[in-house]
Image (tube, rainbow, N blue to C red):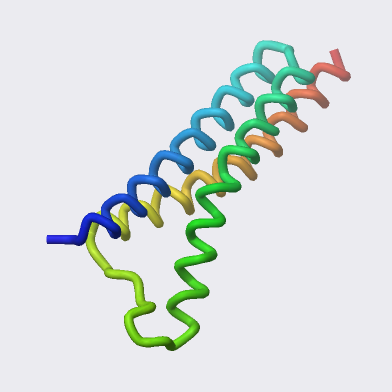
Length: 110
C-alpha cells in the first residue's frame, strides 16, 4: 500500500492535470463554436491549471536527482497513473492551441 504522502501527491497531480485537460477541451469547443477570443482565454486557464501540477512533478524529479537518502518518491500505480494524466494533459493543451489556430483560419476564410 502506498503511503499517504504518495497518494496525496499523486491526487494533486491528477487533479491539476484533469483541470488543465478539461479547460483545453473547453477551449477547442469554444473555437469550434466561433468564439476564438474566448477559446484563447480558456486555454490560458488550462495553462494556469497546469502550473501547480507541473511544479509538483518538477519537485519530485529534483528530489530524486538529489541523491539524498529518503529523497526518492515512492513508486506506486497511482503515481504512474498521475504521470500519465499529466502527460496527456500537456499534449491536449498543445493540441488545443493548434486547433484554435485552425478554427481561427477557417473563420477568416469564410
